[in-house]
Amino acid sequence: MSKREIDSYIAQQNEPNKSNLKAMREIILEVEPTLKQGISYGRPAFKLDGDVVCGLAGRKNGCSFYPFSGSVLAALKNDLVKYKQTKSALHFNSPLPKTLVRKLMTQRMVQIMVKKKRR
Image (cartoon, rainbow, N blue to C red; front, side, top):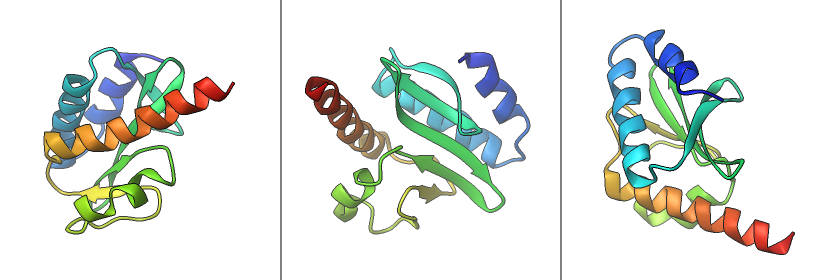
């Protein structure tokens, strides 16, 4: 995994996706600076100790945030009512608020820690 892979992915995007993905990447790394960057499932991903915490993608009509867990969005459904989403992705046309990104990432990182304790 490498930061350059994400740089390349973002560089290939059209505006406003390019700017939105850059901003979201900065927010994610502000929330958790120790995350490793790279590509997973063809999209920018951010890993903690080998597990993907979240990912991003540019789409035809905007961008998506992926928590890499089917239960994260459901657990925070009250915080997400104003956003379009699928079971696995939160869609946005401007960067998500840092407080929301922190909640999403924290929910996922807790899941990762619980999973590791069970091993």
